[in-house]
Length: 137
Image (cartoon, rainbow, N blue to C red; front, top):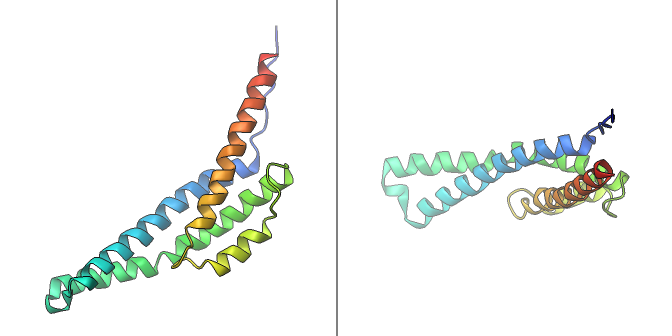
């Protein structure tokens, strides 16, 4: 009987799954809140009380996107550290923190977690291909 070797899931994959969830929450608040706020601001919605309330709620949603952004940066740091330690990428995790400060969540904050998630996706495909090659032997 052939014994199957079970490989341990790397920690960065677990963090990557959490990162993807927090990216979605961040983008919903950031795009949804910001988009609705801009829509009602350009329409001169201050004259209508209902539109003014919607605009205020949208602004609160947009500004509250900082909370999931912080979680995104924590998980992006963990994923980047794991990918760097295993040799999938050259860039260190400290660069995530620098980019998080420079590209604040209200300007281009979406870029950092999305780029780390893309690198993790590529590394996961490579890891899966290695596991399939090893199990077929």
